Length: 388
Image 1 (cartoon, rainbow, N blue to C red):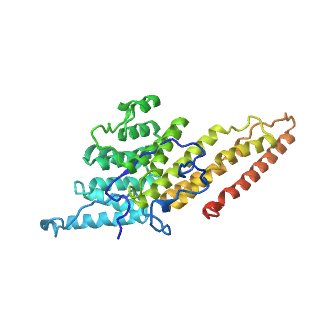
Image 2 (image 1 turned 180 degrees about the vertical axis):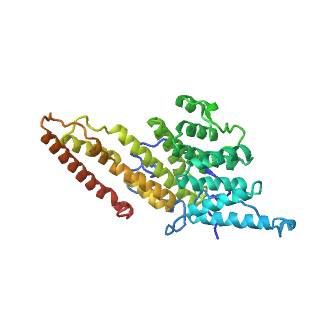
Image 3 (image 1 turned 45 degrees about the horizontal axis):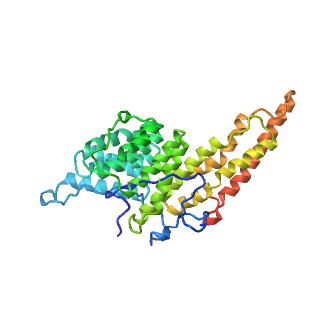
């Protein structure tokens, strides 16, 4: 049976700056159809008709029968069984069960082969379960203790993702530069290396291609949270270019899907932040002003349709579930205006006129958003309908 993606072997690589309207489609001298998601068939012969295994499951656990003297060691046998069960559950997407098994392995098997790998996989499960805070200390300790440079790079990238989830954006950004230093970019971002609690990575092996793609993808997302839009798009474009120009066979098919889906989700997140900043809610509101605002906002949001198709094509449940929240939030964001209505464009003095204005505007906002939601839920370019 083929080996599951990135299960205790190698790790992911970096990207470049994406424009807000860009999609994961190849650059070419002739026009391309930007309405299509990434063409996985160009790099893989795998079937798309199943959910991919969790690509960041890392293999390499204890083996009870590695040496004859260990063949009947009950502790090693139990440790190997626990490791394999946790890995299988994680590969099947059962992250809650996998996290429980990894925790049991870690509590019982300090110092055994595969311990640091188990820490990484435990952190991966916690991150996708929305419990990144619990992963921070184990990941930081493992980074300081292990001598495995590739595992260190993977763990740093996961740590950066976890720090972003917990709102520690500056430390998250510093962590990405520990994997791949860029002193000019660090200075432009106003970062100091000493602010990173897990030190630098000067002596570790540089990131491989898969790690670089993950790295630039998360770096772009962090820049967006720090309201550094140009740097965010530059980092994401770098990631995209690395994906597009990877040679056939350089990244295994399942990892290619994971990396492409992850890129599309993060690009969608950055797009959501950009649209909120670029398309300003009118200070005073009327029907005409709101409809003009809605046209501008949904024009800004429209590239997310193609990005979500790329997410669906990746067939990774963890990424799809996260991206669905982002996609839906992007589309329904204008509904928030109902809760904080700007004053009317025309002066209103009578209380009953104010009540009429509020009820009419709220009804218009709800109708407009619901109409747009129906458009965004159907994605004929990738044969997807009613996507949330």
